[in-house]
Image (tube, rainbow over all chains, first blue to last red; front, top):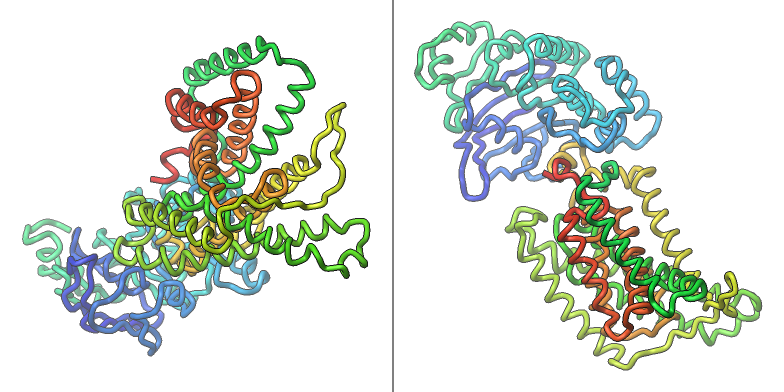
Length: 239
Length: 345
């Protein structure tokens, strides 16, 4: 569904990605793992069009998307879900969700999708008239995922959905991600929480210094010594 | 821009209130103080104030949406006045309008002029943004406060626009003789109807903008872009288009302001500069970047300026707006409805 080939990109004149390759199959959950500053988020930002790719191709559904502006990529059905802090704090939960469905043309579709999101996350329904600034960390993450689902995407890319959340809430959110996949979406999840991400995913990539270092089936990666090394910079530790 | 109104710290308010009381005391002691003069001061102050408020609204809108202060906004106001005047001169000798509407002749022409100024300035603003400001943002990573180039460009644009207007319309002040009927009597006071008209139209424009931003889909998109351009991109908003729309709306509102001022004063090439400065003062007094604050700040500056020149001394009329701005910056740096830092950080 998503195919990234020899991607080179970065910010300003700083090159972060040095030819990354990866592939996400339809209706699968793929985890992209790596430490800080290895280029995980940069791949996401390049795929969703927030930064230009300097070289290489990004293919989505057989179409090259690396030169499209960000809002057109959303229209193609590839949506990046931001971290929980990136909501619109001065707007209500409903307004935030409606913004997620900004590209939808019909009002009927919008209210249908709103129902769908409230069905995934009943907590958001309870708080639909509150300002987003008043939500807790877990609720903010739910709001971000819900906002991503509003535009009828074919694939969502999550940027560290477990960041700064309690394990109980992370579990809850990951269950919902699994449910989203069962409903027919493809999911790419960028994570620092290796264990949780590999439990959820079918396939995993580990990125180091802007290139994919290790890849493989998530069951296999879970016990792979080289993952621990590449992830923790060579320190042997119990992940 | 859209957070809840916050009315400052207690200490600030006490000091500021003391200043206000002292000022009112000073005015009341003036030998000119009576109920008639107070009425006219208030009406003129409000009508001048709404003009400052409209221009300040545009400055605040551009500041929240694009994160830059537009120093050429006064020139959009001036060119808007000329656009209205040009339309007025075109329609002024058309007999057929008079034949169809013999009673409301002047009003209809004037409304058409206002509409012309609104639309033409909106399009002109989009043009300026696309052609002159957009290329500057390519290197600096979008519209940010760090983009000093855009601010300097605003100053330069102001000089260029003044000189272009000078070439087209020459520097002679031109009358704008809109026929809006006889002066109106309000409580024993005869006022040119244009004063009332300014307040009514100005408040309607502000209310219309509020409705547009809060109740329409495009308004929702504008608010999103104003908060974060990255996140707006990710939900599928065409951010470059919306930045143009924000700039266009701000310029269109300034254009309406120019055409509203025309019949009361005169239309002249240099009218934009002082209006920009006073609108800036109004925006600071109301709380920079706060839209209701811009209108309230406009009214405050207008009334303060009119009252001071009436009761204290009329020979330094332009001084008072900036005096008020300095006092507000000293005592309440966030203005009346200061923007909470956490929303813009």
